[in-house]
Length: 232
Image (cartoon, rainbow, N blue to C red; front, side, top):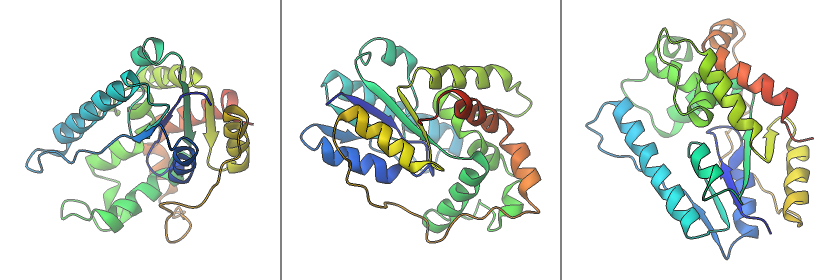
């Protein structure tokens, strides 16, 4: 079976697929570990330090020639072009608006904090909302969108990165993604639901315009991927 790097963007439904792949590659597989870091640091520096640590892990696992690597880790084009050039790169996307709402609700269920508003409407005005709204830029272009920053270069970079992936799926079409994975590895996948939300994600109609505005850059990336790269 081919070597695989599965980049798992949060709340894109990737837990079930990555678990199935790890089972198929059980003799040589690894998950990128999360490092909560120093809780006294501000969120921005703490997150950057955590993802730098994950990047080191990814490089180390590739150097060990682990056959199946998965996790919440940013795409590294230099690694892809060199040490990991013989790996298959895989990811799964989701409608950015639904992904954003799901991410907020997940954080409220599992990581509540006094600094995060307890309503989605209030959360939309926070800096953390802007970070969650540009996860595709963060994972595939290397950084979240900053206030007053021109998103066009980051959107272009993320689209170019996804164009280099071997398999890009869409959570709205799980069967097509499963079939693409199975054809690639040459064996059926034993799928089951992992880390699923207790209820389907619903986007409040009155908040949708504000969420779409926040997620505009990720929506552009997602639409480009659907046009050119989504597994079918």
